[in-house]
Length: 360
Image (cartoon, rainbow, N blue to C red; front, side):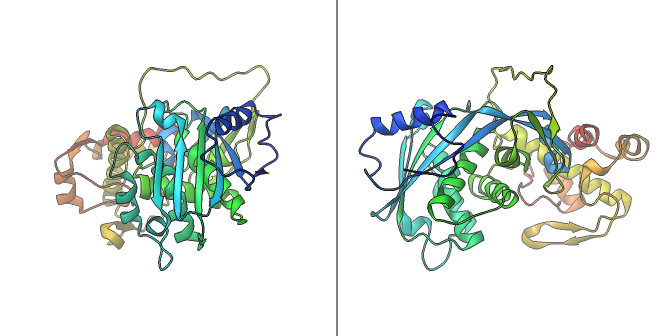
C-alpha cells in the first residue's frame, strides 16, 4: 500500500485505521495487491472572516482534527467507480460508476458546463461531483491524462452540512490522492485554487477560497491567516495555550450551494457594482456576459473600503434591497464569474455589501 503522506498513517491518525477497516469490509471494491494512494484532508472551523472571503477579506481559519480520507487505485476496467458509506448514510446512492471516456475524453477535456450537467443531473449521485470533478479539472487545467480507470473510496469523518468544510476536505483529499497515484505534483496554492474550481464550476457552489486553502495549508495549533485577494497567505497566528475554540452545532444545515449563501454573495457583488458606478470607475463588457471594472481605489474588493469611508460616503447610496430585474436594467451586470442574477428575485444588497467591509 502506498501512502500519499507519512502523516496519514494509522499510528498517528486513528481514522486511517477506520478507513482500512472499511476497505476490509468491502473486499470486492479494490484489487488485492495493487498500489493504493491514500490522502487525508481535515475540516476547518471559521474563526474570523466567514463569507467575506469572496470580497477580499482577511480570514482566520483553524484546521480540525476530524478529516476526510480518500483511497485511490488504478483499475484495468475503463470506468471511474466511487464508493462512500457516508453517501449511503445520507440517503444517496453510495456507489457511482462513470465511463472513463465520458468523464475524461482522450480527444479533448470535457467542457465545464457539460461536466456540471453530467455529474449533478441526478440528485442521488450528485455528491460524486466533488470527486469526479477533480479529474475533469486536472485534465483541463494541468493536462493530466487518464489512461486507466480509477477506483476511489471515500471515508469522511467531517460532519456534513455543518459549515466545517466537508466538501473542501473531500476535494483536497481526492486531488492529493490522485496526484500521488499519477506521480504529479501541485504546490499548495495551485492545489487550493484547483479544488475551488471544482466546487465553483462543476458542483455549482459559489464558495470563496478560504475553505480549500485552510484544508491544504492549515497547521495544528495555529490559525491560518489568508488575505483573499485572491489567495495571499499571511504569517500564521499561534493560538495561545490558554485559549480553546469550540464549534457548537446550531442544528441548522449549511450548504454553500444553497439559495441563502448564493443570494448573499450576489447581493455583495451587486453592491460593489453600484459603488463602482457611484465612484466613477470605468466599466467595460467582459467575457461570458460579465463586466470588467478598472478599480484603482479598491482593487476589485469590497474589503478594501474602510468602515469610515463606507459610512461617510457610500452607505446611503446602496439600496437595502433590489430585484434582479431592476439591477440588470440599471447596471447591466456585475463582476462575479461564479453566480448569476435571477431577474425575479429580490436581493438584500446593503447588508451583504457592508458585511465584508466591517469583517475585514
